[in-house]
Length: 235
Image 1 (cartoon, rainbow, N blue to C red):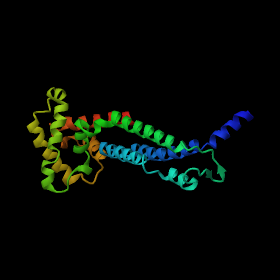
Image 2: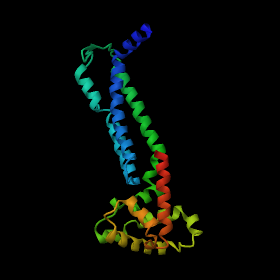
Image 3: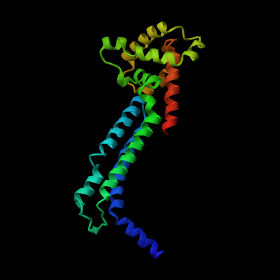
Image 4: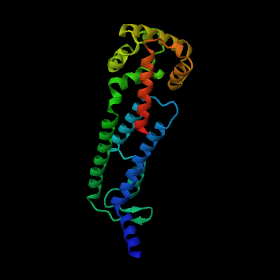
């Protein structure tokens, strides 16, 4: 037992061990903020996409600019051959800094590749269309801009759910959906802009579904399905 403890202490006095711990603290700090975002009430697809982008950029920046914890550590020990940290002499080798750079590259590139593989669809296709159309924070305040807002995304949405919509008796045509999309925008703009997006669509679907135009109703339902499936992915 004594020999094992002695070995552990020796390992903790290695410069490469301590510097890696500080790097990991910086990475975990960014991931903690992202995790807290995913747990927020009223979460939207746009918020998720923005949060992932912010975290990715923050980690990429760490490749060249040390994060808070790593910077404090490096400032205290100084450049090689500096090896004193909090009154403890560390075993520092000249190759340790280069090895840390390789570890940073591998960790950060691995995270970015994972985000792209798992969440890349948020930036295009039906996910992007849903995030734009049904997130009120994206809606323009100016009524002129609002008139054409979401039309391209509506076409993407209809194209994605074409097979389902063709079998839905409420859906008439893309032309009718565009006309009713304008009706829905006017309704929301005049009476519901004060609500969070998730609260608004849940209220309309559960309590005031008669306010949703017929051709748009299955699209709103499609957005709800997409959103809840996505929540299952990230939780």
